Length: 286
Image (cartoon, rainbow, N blue to C red; front, side, top):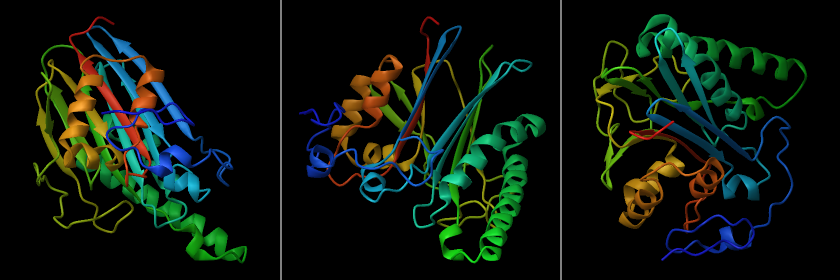
């Protein structure tokens, strides 16, 4: 049974936990360009899109920034929507910068090459150079280099909006893509997937890495809804039938973007991570 978290109005799934109910909004993070929450909504013929990224309770408690990021880019020529979602590695203080870099550059590299493997390699190399320059400046200024580490996971989806072409998904680590159809959830990024030429099968290989991983898959479109998410959503979704049932009820049809944002922020005991989800609904009026 769901309850309401008093301070924010975000719904709970099962037991929300004391942190969600009692933790105040607190101070802003030390990074001024990192908003607590980010929302987007867009529409195409027969397709609706909602996106939300929410600062997690643990980052709020520690006065740390939201390290999740997402981007949406529509290529008019190919009528393709490219969704990019990144989860900055929490143990590295500047990981929100890595996530922002990847979400900014990955869509353009994918559209330029038509290959996720090529795009991941190009963005990985660029991020490695960016991180090295950032570290060099910190050392030159006498700052602690351990406070300037950064890395991020990545998951992306290229969605053709016209015709019956398959969508292409790619991922590097534990961020994921899910399909919801008639109340049933399917994890499209479970297992090794279609490895391709750039894949390296190890458990964790966040960007930047000297040997970046890129797993890929092709999926049919046109039915139900797809959700590109960080593990703040994907882990409870995969672990608990209560979460799957609740989110399926909420997201059978696209809610308004503000409701979607509060739902992405749902409270559940012991789940304190940042939350990001991009939902793509088919067979609805734009």
